[in-house]
Length: 115
Length: 493
Image (tube, rainbow over all chains, first blue to last red; front, top):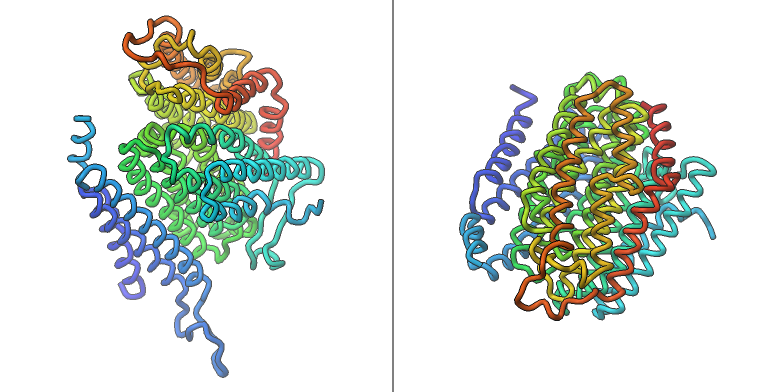
């Protein structure tokens, strides 16, 4: 268990996120699930950079083992992409709510059948 | 012209131009500007193809950092081939965009519509050009985010939930790709595709690598709308503005398939991936199911855009069937059909834009009697439809014929049966459209204003229809190049 505990945590988050995306009928809850799912991947990347017994990747005299900074830089980009996705999704939800007056999937489908 | 920056031009030009329309919010300016940028991107792509044909692959290292440290572009024949297709079709479609948005997008949003269009083009071109896996993810998200905007840009409120559902599915797919890239990095310590290809053989037995490959393939399959991961596609195509449907059908799923070819055949190594991980059997079965299910579902649609969307699901199936034969003939068939399908669906969706331009609807019954009222638009639907069925002398025939030949050479007779079943269904759904066009009396009420669409719509649609005929006869650029690409891939795998 030791040494892979973080992996279990990440997978648990990942699966909970995906489950919320699939199981919720409310669009906003789906978005929350999606966010949890994405965060789990951020954590996966960050954990990849760990080098045991190493210092943070800031050059200092007397330190010769550093953690790998590359996954951190990568995931910074992915976090930005995630924020953009979230902003766009929220904007869509605002417009859906304005056009339909609800964010519930079943209610949305019902309203379009009336029209 | 200095050729040094030629490889980045198809990405940089649209990326720089897109924010301009935020400042200059004049739809006409945005439209003309976008066409000019599209022309530049297409010219650069064509120049790249010529260069690659003459001198072999072109390399570009960003900021002068040599790969694998820096991000690098590497354009080989496959990349140049797909890039010419994507930038060419998207240019012709943007040509129709000026008239197309008049009816389907509200005035204040029209200029921004072209911003999103250019961003999407930049993202798709970047996915084709890049030689770096993480860079691929970034471009994937650039194109995806702008696609969600484009789908939701129209007046139809049903486009909003469709776009949201696409966003959820698309983001799950992109995140799967991201997980895959992370695990591959964990297993090999590199993100550069060429470097990864060199290091993978010795790291291939690690579980992280296996898991990474599977995550990557599933993520790409969502983006390519491979059955049964296609659920986002029919709604998104049916509710998006017509121009967007044409653009997406012709480019977005094609680029996803390009990425699939790139990672499976260049990076992972076809032999190892397809056999060791049972990818070949799984995807062949899914692709065959896609052909049958997609064609069957298309037959049962009442909405013309949904009909074409389900037909797209089936066509993706044909392409993947060809690729999964995993020999030179099969790859050639898949690539040829990829090329030709972009032309068919581009032409057909643009014809539907022309139909709705004068207030026509998008139901099958709305096509009634249009054969006489809109002869040229109807002609485009006929040509595109025949190409979709795979009638000889149209582009659609070439891809299907190559696929049947490739299957016969391997003795995969059941695959030929799948193609035949799919084509019979296609005969059915295209037949329903043609029957409405020519043999049904127009609806009694209204419809008086329905006449031929303006030239701005008609000419691009006719250009794509003509391309369908041209590539049905002269196959040097489609099947010929696809054959050379396939031969190169066969050598690599």
